[in-house]
Length: 274
Image (cartoon, rainbow, N blue to C red; front, side, top):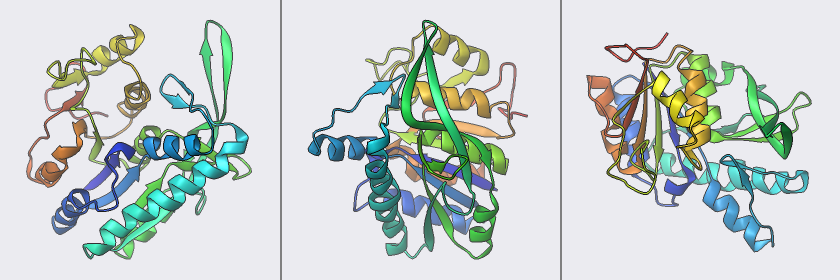
């Protein structure tokens, strides 16, 4: 059973224990796990200290060429190794990689169009090709891959890719049974200002409508865009949950569910997608 788990940068702390313990339980159940992490708040903090003002378009961080080195250092260096260390402290042999390792994730520049005008986001990209051999090699030797969302373009120069998109592409490539997003919100909300407006089950048609109507804002936009793609792949179940729900992650191996938003196809009774 394959799990792709994406954790928001908002949940990453130097003393993280809940996620490693949940992954340890998954491994004990015989699962194969890939962890993908973000790092938005940490990036903003570092860039602001450098006198830079973070800018976002549709939830995507504008990435000027001159900032890409800093972004890669924070994501693939500081945060990736911080999370790897959390796994190692619990005795889990984790290995940190980015999309620029071993021809893993190749991307291309991503351009947003608004009102017929193309908006240049700089070194922002999207994944166009996944070579999962490095994941299978790490699994074969008992390692848990911990993935930074920095990918390579056609010349294998760095691109800043939204971590939700990276997780979705990896899950699709692996045909994972579970793709789980942990964030600082309980799931998809009908009203972003009301945490009690949680949508427990969201179909493909409903998701497309919410995005088209502009009722989804901020970081949830690229997350749902990724899911609109992945639900046409071969992932059995997709959940968007609050970080505290990570302790219940192993229950999925035993037929359980997570609190949050469960993504299903219109008319699907069991939530499987093909």
